[in-house]
Amino acid sequence: MKVLSFGSLNYDHVYEMDHFTEPKETQSSLSYTKNYGGKGLNQSIALVKAGLDVYHAGRVGNDGQELIDYLNQYHVNTDYLFKDDNSATGHAIIEICKGQNRIILHGGANQLIDEKQIDDVLSHFEKGDVLLIQNEISCLSYLINSAHDKEMIIVFNSAPMNEKVFTYPLDKIDIFIVNEIEAAGLIKYDGNDIDEIIKGIKEEFFDKMIIMTIGEKGSYYLYKDGLIHQDAYKVEAVDTTAAGDTFTGFFIASYLKDKDIKKALDLASKASSITVQGVGAARSIPDIKDLS
Ligand code: RIB
Image (cartoon, rainbow, N blue to C red; front, top):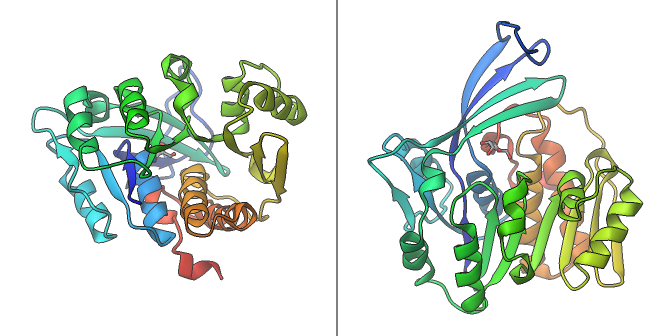
């Protein structure tokens, strides 16, 4: 079984702020760092740091070699990562303040993924292989349909949540990994009552495996009549960027290895509690060796 992470790669421009910038306000940042990110890249890094071999497919622009080198440094297979000399790599502008963040995304090359690239990449994968995706690249419906036709196992982290998600063939997804806001979005529920969200998810996605994180309140596994809750590890958050990506990568890696949901939830919670204690995305993701 091979694992294919087909997703975004970004340069993250991270500004530490005194407060989030208001409309009409100009303020200086307290610090600036340029990091490697994108939900796809972060999740690939989390998968390898959790001990899994992974292929990363996606698209960077003419300035994207650093991101490819970074993945290679962690032994992510980048054979199916396409460098497009006519475009620019995706980037994110991230304000962080008191443990919270605010992100502006510019898709760049991530939004130029097309059917041809998908056909080329998927020709190297087969029935039973795992496809991990997020909502930051183009052509996702085609990717989901093609992977489903090949009988791959499809894991969808529906982040960032937006209207486009409802245009995808969600019935072909096997495992959803969401936070409570994304879960509420999936069932078109406006409130924040966790019990209502769980009830709605169970009704609408009864036969899907759902992993839902709810920040400091931990995480849930929901499948048919089953429900497992995992407490969060309590830590002081400095920057929550990539916490969800860490959770996703560690959960999937652990679950594929041991098929033990409780163990996977615990490991993923522990790993993401470490990520939030550092500034930056991929670089804050811990190695499995540091979790014992
Ligand atoms: O999940 C965090 C990521 O979201 C950042 O690295 C940023 O690039 C955006 O894609």
